[in-house]
Structures are given as C-alpha cells and as structure tokens.
Length: 308
View (cartoon, rainbow, N blue to C red):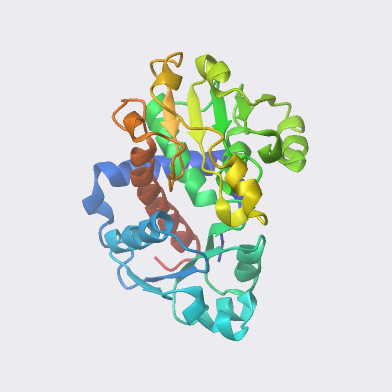
C-alpha cells in the first residue's frame, strides 16, 4: 500500500524510533543495505534551490543501490509552462518508484501525494514543514543525548517562517517532559497556531524571550536558524532582522558543557565560524545524520509500497 510522508506527525513515535534504529544500523553496517533498492528510481523534484536536502536524498538512493532522476530547475520543468503540481506528480509516477519534492507553496507536497501513484516525500513546502530535516535533527539529538524526554530545547532566530522549527516542535512535543525556550525578535515569533494547536494543546512548557545569552544556561539543545530572506516580502524588514542573533564563543560562556548546537543549514552569519571547532557544534554531524535517516525512510516507504 502506497504511503507518503508529508508532515512529521504522519509518523508515530514508535515509527520514529524504528527509523532511528534502522539509520544507526545503516551507519554501522552499510554493506547490508548497499543493494536493497537495486533497480529502483528516486525522482527529485525541487522547485526551490537546495544543496543539502537534494544531494542528501540522491546520495541516500545511490548508497542503497538505486538510481536517481531529477529536473535541473523549476524553470526548466513543465511547471514553467503552467503544468499543475497534480499533473506533474501523475507524470513522474510513470518514471520513478518514489518522489522527493520541495516546493515554495504550503500544501504542494500533499497535492502531489494525493495524485501520485508512488510514495511522495515532502522535502520542504514553503514555511509549513520539513519532515526529513526533523528526522536528521532527531537522529543527531539521539546520538548526542541518548533520549528525547526531559530536554530543554532552545529554538533561536526565525521561528515564524522556519519550517524546520515547526516540524521539530511537532516531533519533540510528543515526548515526556520536553520544554521549549523560543528565542526570537518580536516580528519572528513562533506562529500562534503552533503555540495553540501543538504546545498548549499538549500541555508543553514553553517561554518566549529575545535574550539568547540569558536563556543559554538552561539549554540542553540550541537549535539556531537563519533569517530567511526568501520568506520576506519587504527587504527592509529582512535587513533589519537578519543579524538579530549571532552565536559566538563568548555567548557560549554560560552554556552547559554537554550542550548540543544544531542548525538545519545553510548558515549565513548566525553562527560564527569560530564556533565550528567547539565539541558542542553538531551541525555538520546533522548533515550526515540526514543522509542516513533519508535512507531509512526510503527503505520504509518502498517496503510498505511492496516494491522492495
């Protein structure tokens, strides 16, 4: 039976744990999985620019013994001629066994999944969510902390448009005794619907602050994000807010010795390169974790579809 991944909440906590276990097994025993997708094709449909996510999906499929087909850019696809997402999904289903799609419009991945005859993985839809980045985040946290329950998680920067933030909150809020510290300027605070529908509905403790250094000592995880120029309608607002938070070694002075610093990347200047050598910096480990979690997800969805 075909199943897609549009939102992280499509996966139960048991399934998240199973994906993490599979990813760890792939890391430890890659040879076991090197031909599991032999003869299968992944289509990468990216209507927005991407480096890590796209190449991570492609590397994942190649390492599983499969192949990849892709469009070079949205401008070179039939979308430029006005083809709908629904029709594109139907067409690409004729060529590939599974689709990974990124699109600037919220809900586009769901439209694709509803019309494709093969599994669709949401690789980011506008400011909505980014479930496979959350899978990368969860594996990184699991490796660094060994648990999800009982953590204090600081989310810093663009919490309004940050789809990675929204997805991570949805995932972690299903575990016990998780607390969030929401660090942002007033204009980029977490949307009310996320606070109401997720945090408050589940009785999750959270606080909002503009003070990164003041919040630092309590944090187990610090999740930095960039202020996303592409989400702003007004360049003046972007320029005013883009340097709201810059993490430096000095700002880490009051942090826990076992703090884990995450970032979905790309980084602009919100984390100083001087932080890169700090043993608490995990954002490049996060990139590698993303590849292994995408491998585990591809295996899961193709198995459920009965094609491997």
